[in-house]
Length: 205
Image 1 (spheres, helix red, strand yellow):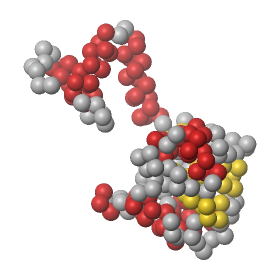
Image 2 (tube, one colour):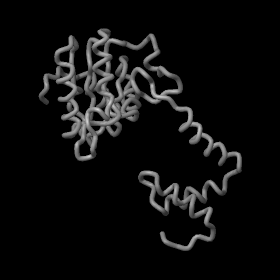
Image 3 (spheres, one colour):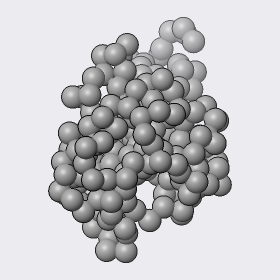
Image 4 (cartoon, helix red, strand yellow):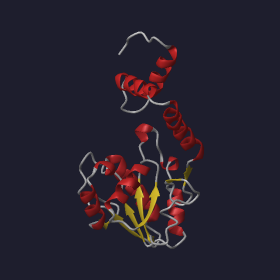
């Protein structure tokens, strides 16, 4: 969409929306025009929600999930089983596993997977803090729930090497997930089953 903009303000707003993932310029234009049609208070609420999110959101100091407090709701819930930790790549994966209602343990959010092509090494991820959590001694089982990609497998193996000498059971979710190989796209039943049918992990898949 290359037309001449009647307003520099409109053009700037469209440019910002077009920077969002999966949003082309046509969609950006549609979103901006939609906002223009809304009441000023509605647009201010929209803008403020994003600004407040950026300024005030926290990362749980235990599991690194997004949180409103220093320790997230899941970690601070006495009903959860603190002896089992599910290792995931990102916050979307926590949401996907929670939606299955099949897991009552805690999480550890790595913030990605090891990917030399993308310049992501082990030190860029929350792996040392996972090793520390396990070293503290309360965790009996670590479930690896990373994507079934080469990068996911590399990360699984790296974590295995870091934890193999510690007294902890290491499991990997059943390989029933093939939809895009990403947890967030697996349907809840499949994902729930793959957690329940997890198998011991010994460094090989």
